Length: 174
Image 1: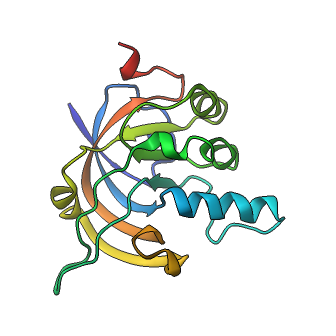
Image 2 (image 1 turned 135 degrees about the vertical axis):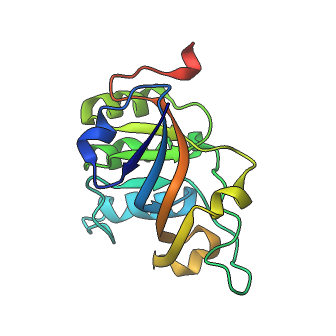
């Protein structure tokens, strides 16, 4: 059963279970390796983050440039393990969820359990299809990173599967 949810429905998102399939609408942010490194360096330097991360979902993606008349180019998920060294600190700051592909290390799962966060999988290799769910995109910060700049995306009915829920239940362990 697919459930339609909006990113503002924080408690419903937190209570999703591993294996739940949803169609997500609302606002999410993109960030990959280089952006995560900058975010954590900002925190280490006593600076704030360039956007409020509380109850936000970060999509591990670096979209390709948009073709004329398009909102965004191909926007498929990247391998999540590359953000594992950075994810716990952001989860401890209230990040609601992550979208990517692949397994996560135990410190990330522990931080998810501490904070009631969820990890969603998007379909790898389906970036062109996923981009059809993106209705708006704007660069928030780190424009010099090109495709890895942090973007705020507005999405409509993005198909996702909960891979790890707030209790640490993990589809990869089945």
